Length: 363
Image (cartoon, rainbow, N blue to C red):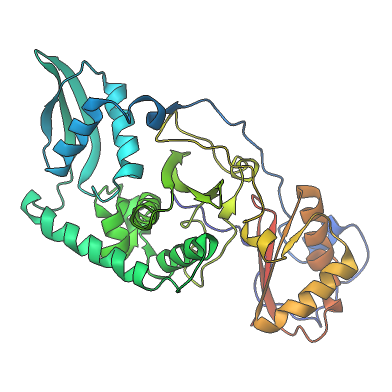
């Protein structure tokens, strides 16, 4: 499910006239101001997974599986002896290869038949199967609306950024569906692009559906009760998580084109995946590409950076390690070094302990 952005308890409007009484450590000053300090995340190792793309994509029975699903069949024969875990892999792969198949549920089985295996898959009960062709056209139209807005001559980075922001701007995260344990269309590209209501699977499948339509390699990965994307930009793979970049306001970019190391601070992978690429490149990361990334906290440099950027109403920065991020946070907010910024006025701030990011907004 969606992770809410980590927001400091001191994120309420603050003013530069607020004085910190007394001396002490950053921790003591933070406690007096009721500031929640960063907590270092526990990083996971990247696990071995069963990659459906490498094991079943080229199998004849997978094509038969896709054709049956395309026709809305809930029970059908494939000409191979397969087990339940193979069907699980096929369902995972469909999310990346054919995310427009929004009518698929999560229950499945495979039993031996005389001429192969009989596969049963769940069909979403929120609508009649006779409605599928019309709904599929609605989905295509919604995707085309997004695609039509991609700027002329946009490169791959700019295209991916536009689609990411479009999905965030046009989708409401459906907390009620999660609370009610509702499966439904919120888990699909249709829910995201047509109805404008989705949970993480819907965001991820919508993104890959549009990427597939415009010829950019992308897929869906799952783990830690969550779903997100990989995408290939200029020859390198990156992770992208539109759900966690949606806080109900303007699109954020903490989770736009990030690495394995960054991803494994907040989640791990389910064993069965469509595909799990190596994501180690950093050059297209949003913060790196835009000059918002700092290997270390240098007070003069950071104060100058804030002064140069806060005029737009928002200033974002990412740090190369938890230690430097922690030092920046404590200095700026617990020790009030942000008061050195000229004419900052009233502001609010947010921080993400997984991505080592700080965002300051004027109010």
